[in-house]
Image 1: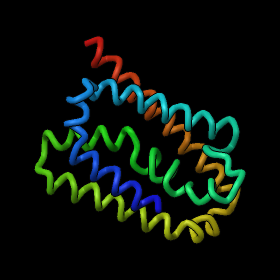
Image 2 (image 1 turned 30 degrees about the horizontal axis):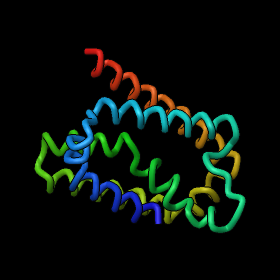
Image 3 (image 1 turned 180 degrees about the vertical axis):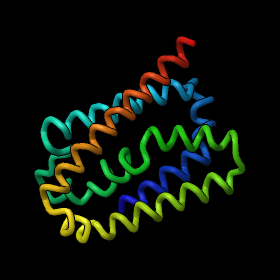
Length: 153
């Protein structure tokens, strides 16, 4: 579900992202700042509470593949901004091929999640998760900084 969600959102963004930005007057810097703030909140929430989302009922747990896995974690502001920027520099076939290849790698890793958890153990997974959340927080701060510098520069 996460991969399909990410694919759909990424494809839609490639198709109409630039037009939507032009229509409502959003610059890439604005998108970077907003996305960075959201990613930073998600990272802080995970680091402080131990989880990105709380699942209290079964309908909420069914949606984890869509939110937060499919978006904003697999395809979020950083990927969408990268797709938009790459579309201006490279042919659409190259951008879409790279995007799809990344989604295939992500899908394979998600499909092997049980084996990875069994190999690393619960403690190993928790430790790696915290390090990854720190990296996500750093990426979020970088996105916010780049947005601010672009707007002020």
